[in-house]
Length: 153
Length: 66
Figure 1: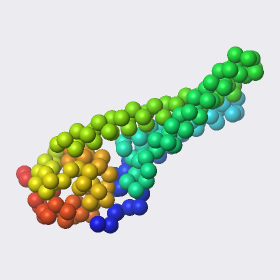
Figure 2: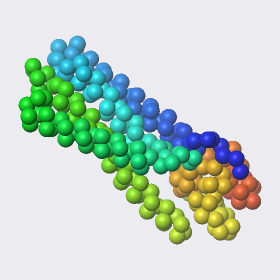
Figure 3: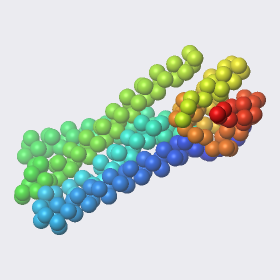
């Protein structure tokens, strides 16, 4: 029988839409928070680069996490994202380790000139990558277990 | 939404697993599981595909008795 879609089935399309929606709302909320802090309360907490990273990475992480948890990332006619997320997680771990080394050597700082600086943004980026990778691996393990149980029934 | 035990019974009668039925109708196994658990309300297109594969009518599998 012909598939309904070349990539995702109808439930996965809905879940993906929901994940993008939550990601967008997270981005919007964080951008509003940054704007309120800097313009509303005259509190300059982040530099420009850190503001960008602080808004985007949590939003991307929320979007990916929702897709993974709701079984909407690995589509029916596509190879699983194990390799992709492993590289993603390793990249995140590399960013964390290299940033920590730079902080220890004194080449980077979490606080610079009274603002939260680049190093904090890089740590956040790395943490988000590792978090998504861990969520994917845990969910993949749960899915394998569920498949075994389904085959037994 | 209530669990749809009738799909499970119909596929068991044909000795099909969730994965077999999901592959036959072109959806993921998780989606088929969500339909059986009553967590997802499928479109009429998918309902018809499931009925066709299992050799049942829409009433047999999806009509909710009051």
